[in-house]
Structure formats: structure tokens, C-alpha cells
Length: 94
Image (cartoon, rainbow, N blue to C red; front, top):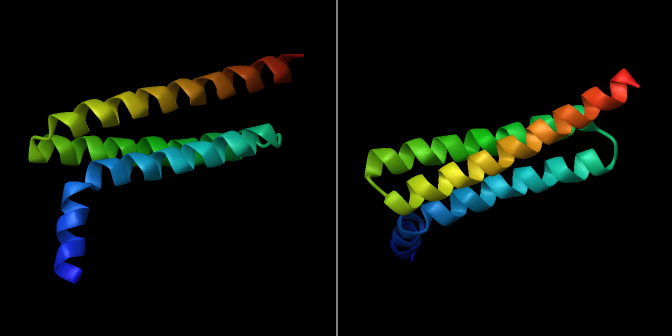
């Protein structure tokens, strides 16, 4: 049974890593919705870090789907962090 789980984990590590990264991203979105921009950027930063580790692992294993997927997720999350940062900067200037 554990051997089957191990094989399944090896086949689905890309999807699992992306899901984990996106969960941190959603946690950041929720924090931002509750007015906690610093926490939001921290949570989303963890999501980006996970995506970048996934990206590096995909490069090491030559998994093109993982390379492309992780890079897209990281860029999407970084863009969101930039939007949060820009929003908080505009609010603090007012």
C-alpha cells in the first residue's frame, strides 16, 4: 500500500506542489480581504517560494509540464503581491 502511495506521489508531485502554492496564495487573498496586507504578502510570498522550489525541482527532473506550470503560477502570484503592495502604497499616501 505505501509503495502505491509513493508511486502516486511521484506521478503527481507537480499538481501537489501547485495546489500547495495556490493554497498559500488563497490564504494571502483572504488576509488582504480582511485588511491585513502585510500578512497577505507574506502568505503569498510563501506560495511563490513553493512555486520556485517546484520549478527548480522540475528543471532538475526535466519535467517540462512542471517547469511551465510552476513558472506561470509564480508569475501570477508575484503579480498579485505587486498589486497588494501598490494598493497599500496608494492608501498610505492619502
